[in-house]
Length: 193
Image 1 (spheres, rainbow, N blue to C red):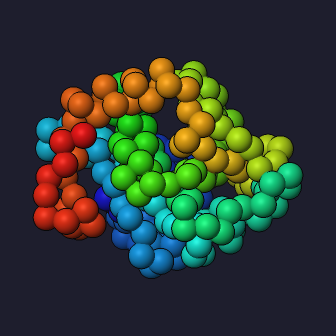
Image 2: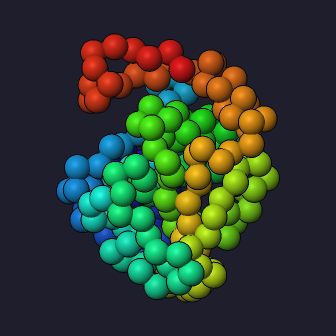
Image 3: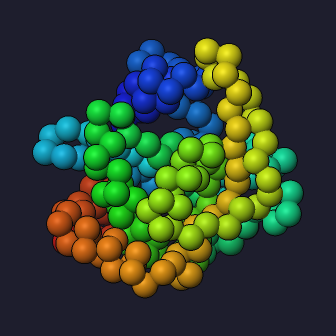
């Protein structure tokens, strides 16, 4: 998964992230995160990392300036989603990755999923019909390896406030997937979503 993250975020998207060999890692990978991966057959096509918000997490620690109008949550009922993405060649599976993200939150009775997002990603969430709440206005947070500005916004997806039609679509998509808990967080069972 760390090799996939390097290929996606550094090689494809041009983010200026720490790389060790062929893997991308940061200090939050040492904070006991939950790592989720989406496979189509044997191919890893998407991934995300989740950290409980009652501990240190990326947005709150690295980008505090993005929470201007609403503070970052510090509750165990909220989870930060970071390093979410998939290669361009597999974007047709994007809805499945979001369904997996929702399932992750629902399985943990999460109130909200917190994230830092660039504006293109935020627009895509709205195209999918996902309700979001910003913590402040968009701001430039740096430049990519090509010198282009990265403009991002902090916010959350309130899981309990999503439109019923969206929730139904996510459940229908989950019905086509098999969720395997390799870390046994859910116990020694396979969960058909």
